Length: 160
Image (cartoon, rainbow, N blue to C red; front, side, top):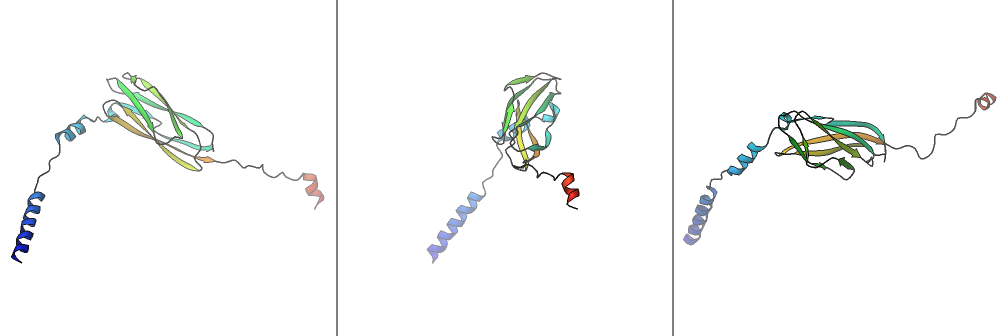
Protein backbone atom coordinates (compact mmCIF):
# COMPACT_ATOMS: atom_id res chain seq x y z
CA UNK A 1 0.00 0.00 0.00
CA UNK A 2 2.91 2.37 0.77
CA UNK A 3 4.44 1.69 -2.66
CA UNK A 4 1.13 2.47 -4.36
CA UNK A 5 0.78 5.73 -2.42
CA UNK A 6 4.38 6.69 -3.18
CA UNK A 7 3.92 6.00 -6.89
CA UNK A 8 0.65 7.95 -6.96
CA UNK A 9 2.28 10.94 -5.23
CA UNK A 10 5.24 10.85 -7.64
CA UNK A 11 2.86 10.78 -10.60
CA UNK A 12 0.81 13.69 -9.22
CA UNK A 13 3.97 15.71 -8.51
CA UNK A 14 5.28 15.13 -12.06
CA UNK A 15 1.94 16.11 -13.58
CA UNK A 16 1.80 19.29 -11.47
CA UNK A 17 5.27 20.33 -12.58
CA UNK A 18 4.46 19.83 -16.27
CA UNK A 19 1.23 21.80 -15.90
CA UNK A 20 3.13 24.81 -14.52
CA UNK A 21 5.09 25.45 -17.71
CA UNK A 22 4.47 28.97 -18.96
CA UNK A 23 3.47 29.49 -22.52
CA UNK A 24 4.38 32.68 -24.27
CA UNK A 25 3.09 34.01 -27.52
CA UNK A 26 5.77 33.83 -30.19
CA UNK A 27 7.12 37.22 -31.15
CA UNK A 28 6.47 36.44 -34.83
CA UNK A 29 2.70 36.35 -34.24
CA UNK A 30 2.79 39.87 -32.81
CA UNK A 31 4.92 41.11 -35.70
CA UNK A 32 2.59 39.56 -38.29
CA UNK A 33 -0.43 41.18 -36.65
CA UNK A 34 1.31 44.55 -36.76
CA UNK A 35 2.21 44.09 -40.46
CA UNK A 36 -1.42 43.62 -41.55
CA UNK A 37 -2.68 46.94 -42.87
CA UNK A 38 -6.21 48.33 -42.63
CA UNK A 39 -7.47 47.94 -46.19
CA UNK A 40 -10.01 50.77 -45.83
CA UNK A 41 -7.13 53.27 -45.60
CA UNK A 42 -5.76 52.16 -48.96
CA UNK A 43 -8.65 51.19 -51.25
CA UNK A 44 -12.37 51.74 -51.73
CA UNK A 45 -14.62 49.12 -53.28
CA UNK A 46 -17.70 49.91 -55.37
CA UNK A 47 -20.25 47.06 -55.68
CA UNK A 48 -18.64 45.06 -52.86
CA UNK A 49 -22.11 43.81 -51.88
CA UNK A 50 -23.92 43.43 -55.20
CA UNK A 51 -27.49 42.23 -55.81
CA UNK A 52 -28.29 40.75 -59.24
CA UNK A 53 -31.99 40.67 -58.39
CA UNK A 54 -33.88 37.99 -60.35
CA UNK A 55 -32.07 36.37 -63.27
CA UNK A 56 -33.09 33.47 -65.53
CA UNK A 57 -31.79 30.07 -64.41
CA UNK A 58 -28.70 29.04 -66.38
CA UNK A 59 -28.15 32.48 -67.94
CA UNK A 60 -24.63 33.78 -67.24
CA UNK A 61 -24.49 37.26 -65.70
CA UNK A 62 -21.62 39.61 -64.91
CA UNK A 63 -20.99 42.80 -63.00
CA UNK A 64 -18.07 45.15 -62.41
CA UNK A 65 -16.31 45.46 -59.05
CA UNK A 66 -14.38 48.72 -58.89
CA UNK A 67 -11.23 49.00 -56.75
CA UNK A 68 -10.03 52.58 -56.20
CA UNK A 69 -6.63 53.31 -54.68
CA UNK A 70 -7.15 56.14 -52.18
CA UNK A 71 -3.63 55.99 -50.74
CA UNK A 72 -0.39 57.68 -51.79
CA UNK A 73 1.28 54.33 -52.52
CA UNK A 74 0.80 51.93 -55.40
CA UNK A 75 -1.43 48.95 -54.54
CA UNK A 76 -1.02 45.59 -56.28
CA UNK A 77 -3.91 43.23 -57.00
CA UNK A 78 -2.37 39.83 -56.31
CA UNK A 79 -5.29 37.48 -56.88
CA UNK A 80 -9.04 37.01 -56.84
CA UNK A 81 -10.23 33.82 -55.15
CA UNK A 82 -13.77 32.59 -55.78
CA UNK A 83 -15.82 30.34 -53.50
CA UNK A 84 -17.03 27.92 -56.19
CA UNK A 85 -16.75 27.02 -59.85
CA UNK A 86 -19.96 28.86 -60.75
CA UNK A 87 -18.17 32.20 -60.24
CA UNK A 88 -15.62 33.39 -62.78
CA UNK A 89 -13.42 36.43 -62.22
CA UNK A 90 -11.73 38.38 -65.03
CA UNK A 91 -8.71 40.34 -63.84
CA UNK A 92 -5.00 40.87 -64.35
CA UNK A 93 -2.92 39.23 -61.61
CA UNK A 94 -0.14 41.51 -60.39
CA UNK A 95 -1.99 44.60 -61.62
CA UNK A 96 -0.51 47.71 -60.06
CA UNK A 97 -3.08 50.38 -59.20
CA UNK A 98 -1.48 53.81 -58.97
CA UNK A 99 -2.56 56.34 -56.34
CA UNK A 100 -6.01 57.82 -57.11
CA UNK A 101 -6.55 55.33 -59.98
CA UNK A 102 -9.23 52.63 -60.23
CA UNK A 103 -9.28 49.13 -61.63
CA UNK A 104 -12.29 47.00 -62.48
CA UNK A 105 -12.61 43.29 -61.87
CA UNK A 106 -15.40 41.53 -63.75
CA UNK A 107 -17.19 38.93 -61.66
CA UNK A 108 -19.31 36.45 -63.56
CA UNK A 109 -21.92 33.99 -62.35
CA UNK A 110 -23.14 31.11 -64.53
CA UNK A 111 -26.68 31.17 -63.10
CA UNK A 112 -26.77 27.45 -62.35
CA UNK A 113 -27.99 27.79 -58.77
CA UNK A 114 -31.71 27.10 -58.38
CA UNK A 115 -33.44 29.82 -56.36
CA UNK A 116 -31.75 32.30 -54.01
CA UNK A 117 -27.96 32.42 -53.97
CA UNK A 118 -25.15 34.24 -52.18
CA UNK A 119 -21.58 33.91 -53.47
CA UNK A 120 -18.29 35.01 -51.93
CA UNK A 121 -15.14 36.29 -53.58
CA UNK A 122 -11.94 37.30 -51.79
CA UNK A 123 -9.73 40.03 -53.22
CA UNK A 124 -6.05 39.80 -52.21
CA UNK A 125 -3.81 42.86 -52.40
CA UNK A 126 -0.17 43.37 -51.47
CA UNK A 127 0.93 43.71 -47.81
CA UNK A 128 -1.51 40.99 -46.61
CA UNK A 129 -4.57 43.11 -47.39
CA UNK A 130 -7.74 41.26 -48.35
CA UNK A 131 -11.44 41.95 -48.68
CA UNK A 132 -14.38 39.56 -48.98
CA UNK A 133 -16.90 40.55 -51.61
CA UNK A 134 -20.43 39.13 -51.79
CA UNK A 135 -23.02 39.05 -54.49
CA UNK A 136 -26.48 37.61 -54.35
CA UNK A 137 -29.64 37.19 -56.30
CA UNK A 138 -32.30 34.70 -57.21
CA UNK A 139 -32.72 32.55 -60.30
CA UNK A 140 -36.09 31.67 -61.77
CA UNK A 141 -37.08 29.03 -64.28
CA UNK A 142 -39.39 29.72 -67.19
CA UNK A 143 -42.16 27.18 -67.70
CA UNK A 144 -41.45 24.36 -70.18
CA UNK A 145 -44.86 24.81 -71.79
CA UNK A 146 -46.47 28.11 -72.71
CA UNK A 147 -49.49 29.42 -70.87
CA UNK A 148 -52.82 27.99 -72.09
CA UNK A 149 -54.44 29.99 -74.84
CA UNK A 150 -57.55 32.03 -74.09
CA UNK A 151 -60.78 31.15 -75.87
CA UNK A 152 -61.83 33.69 -78.52
CA UNK A 153 -64.26 36.32 -77.28
CA UNK A 154 -66.98 35.27 -79.82
CA UNK A 155 -67.01 31.71 -78.45
CA UNK A 156 -67.40 33.02 -74.93
CA UNK A 157 -70.37 35.21 -75.93
CA UNK A 158 -72.00 32.32 -77.80
CA UNK A 159 -71.79 29.99 -74.82
CA UNK A 160 -73.73 32.41 -72.59
